[in-house]
Amino acid sequence: MVIDISPVTWLVLSAIAAHRVAELFVLDDGPFEIFIELRGWSVHPNPILKTIGSALTCVHCTGIYVSALFAVFYFVQNVYTVGIILLFAIAGLQSIVSGKLGRT
Picture 1 (cartoon, helix red, strand yellow):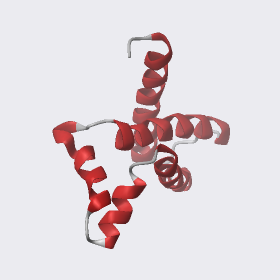
Picture 2 (cartoon, rainbow, N blue to C red):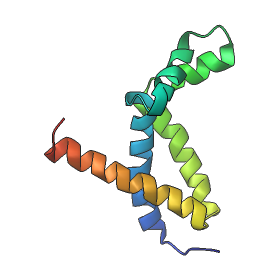
Picture 3 (cartoon, rainbow, N blue to C red):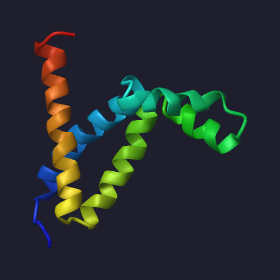
Picture 4 (cartoon, rainbow, N blue to C red):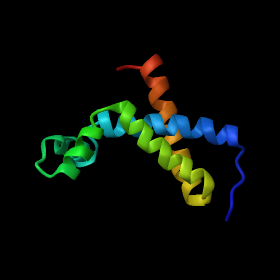
């Protein structure tokens, strides 16, 4: 099933979603402290895990990787990719609003 979303709408939703996912990986603990564990790989002796862990310590770096994934999603739009983007876009907007207007 193909869902037709305008490129501008996709860009806005993807940008907000990428913001949230990048913050999720870099700043949040996550369920069962999984993101803390992933960021801890930055001191792992395995060079691949060390690179992944190091990349997850920078919100801007992580944002690039997530944005690349969401750009690919644009070309394979279906109910699942649109659902993922919408889920994280709503969470991202909530995060932005709560950070600016809500409690910290």
